[in-house]
Length: 558
Ligand code: OOB
Image (cartoon, rainbow, N blue to C red; front, side, top):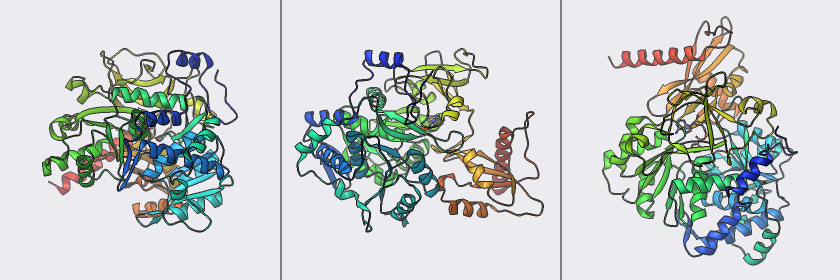
């Protein structure tokens, strides 16, 4: 039996926690302390680069402590939550570290989120502050943040980087260098969070309904970072380029920016993976490691084939994950980009699988690797929950020292996503080869994986039902050559009613839904097929839309 704490997090059973400590996976050391230790070893080494901003480890940790003290001065306290929605920039990193240091818990929103997602996350986490950039590409995140603060009773502060409106807190000033670093350090050491305390809230990628929050503790997240750093061979010489949204677990901690900062390496932040900028940055900074989703890897390969430049000479490893990488693209990574491919099959809920850098080519190109920790437990089971032999695809279940035993405040959903003895079912259909490597064969969850961005079908369907014309709605994935999948919506309509794709898109945009979730194809049908038990037959719909797409490409290109 797992017990639920007052805060809604689900702890590991005491006997497992004791074992994780005894084995040294959990060190009861807060994340901020790891960074302070690194700074003691490499005080003058450059830790963080963002455009013209360069910070050494000493400067980074002084700012971390100063910012942590200023967050406390604002009245924020240990276990208070801050909803963080920042692009990839130095402010994200310093603020996140300052939260770790003070025990304030960042809620890792994505830059693409809008009112619909942010108001939900703010309320669920009872956030006391929100941190944003003033505006990005003509969209005022500051106005949105002020609105979120108005509708969220717990919210006391709006922190803004850039042009700050009256009444909001200047985030750049909050993150400024310390006046008295030693005093801040002593104050913070005395209130340092414990290993079991929450370090951050990550967002689940498209579970049923709205996204769930995943409480990652200092102990479990530190171990996630350390274990993945070993497998990706991160050292003080590593130069990491962060181009995926760094609030996501993959570029944040697998090993990501935190793994590199634990090791004394250098983190370079870019707001987008656009190859022109990314390749120039790789050359200028001597980047050795980066992470991409398959669509980005494909773009980098095409760009390199077109330009044939020498910009990638330092790039040793390119990690690719978030959605399934096609074998034929995997095979091009080394010959075209010159970097070793590391496939990553991970999840915000914990378990990370990776191919090893010295694996044979067939493992690197045809599998999604194996767990990063010897303590990760994996089962592949059939529909009745019976274990399956190697080579037979089934649902993956997992448990381990960095896979929490439940979602935050989601008792009912936890009963479905976790077995009574704590195994998490990610909804992926996986085959285990005899050598232990996993191949992701598909999914048994109602989610669309749009190039690594996860969309819950149910979340979109429930919004579409708000439209008067709609009687039945089903969101399914359709194949896309670049992103792998896109969202297609099937609907039936009331007699005489009409509805276009543009109507739906406009309506969802007005609701304030993140742009990546907006349906890209609409199919109006007289009837939606159902299964024998009366559920919508999504498999049939996926086949239907794939046929429709095939037919339309063959008519346009005879
Ligand atoms: C990563 O995390 P999330 O939480 O956004 O999404 C997890 C889901 C998995 O359950 C699986 O359905 C899918 O994303 N996925 C993959 C995959 N990596 C993730 N499906 C096929 N092949 C892969 N390589 O996506 C994530 C977190 C940490 C590291 C890497 C990815």
